[in-house]
Image (cartoon, rainbow, N blue to C red):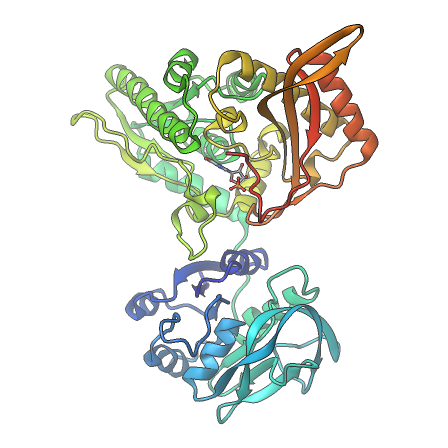
Length: 519
Ligand code: XMP
């Protein structure tokens, strides 16, 4: 299969470039900029993209590739496209000059395309693009042509058809460059001559066959099933491949959303007919260990460790009755295991039964069927596998659950209040038909009491904050500008129906500088 490599120079969009290429039908992977050239040679990519990055090529310690890198691509006729920082780097390595510009160019700009070329094939003479840079090329190396200019940037794109080196100062991968996809498509199909081979339908069949082969006819598999998208998709793939030889463990940590433990059991046990679905109620243990804990990172640590312990105990118990359990399946996805220079909190977080310490006679081999996929690919596969929408389209939910949505120490009473409020919020969002347009919508429990009035009585109760954000990857997010009537309805219902809350506030902070979660 054709592969495109995206070299990451620290830009926040490296994963986005990779996803765009895959959406267009070619498999792509990210590597750090200092990856060993020998590794690249072994992969034999059809093309390479240099991502953007915050550095300046003339700074001493800025990320670079060796001169041999481009010698290798030129010699082997492997096209390279540089984006922003990558655009400067190719030019510097080829002998051009780059300077700091007096004024940083940021935002939407018009480019003027100077001469017909494959990169801009089928575009208009003038197009809108997204710029974000402080440096620009002032002198082109020999053999290169200027492909496009902007009012303030005399070399906004260049190319050298003989060496197959190309650069664009702007970001074709972001949606603010409306024709960006055509530019990437031109590069991967018209210049790099890739075949359109990355499609998810074939992936499902191939993966099920591979799972069958890897596991063999008799062995059994254990899986931690949280009811989130990733572990659910792994569960259904495995179930299709090996049926009831799959043992799933679902741990109720007492930090789940309203009815979540009931819904997950219904889906897997009743609807999908999983026979070996093991429900472990560990609520008391988790709440006991979390008692009086204030610090968010300490909460996360305790939850992570306790989960591993509970999961281990159940695994050992099942292992005794089923000595042929030989594999541990995990819902690891591509961003979880590929470190980019900009690591989001989401990707750094615990998905870790990695640290299981099992008895010596129970050595489990790890299988990670989703390890090459992005979240949106996992979702699409989930839909094709017929997993109910309630699971596939569900908003992301942090591993530590409601514990990081209650500021300060948690207890059963606060959890109950938060669950009720959150349930109402989600119900109203779904009724309004906007659930699927939002990245996340949830309530946060603020342990502050304020005065209110209910009928003839003065009240003194807690505050509930509503957090609703729009985002595409959680790296940045904007608060949703919801209809005031809808907000009013949610607030009225929460205050009337949830005992313990007499005030609701709407969070109007964007990320950055705020984060999505509160802890
Ligand atoms: P922040 O709060 O950093 O969140 O803007 C970004 C995304 O990551 C999720 N998140 C977590 N996921 N364990 C997880 O599995 C965690 O500890 C955790 N903290 C934040 C958050 O819900 C959002 O989608």
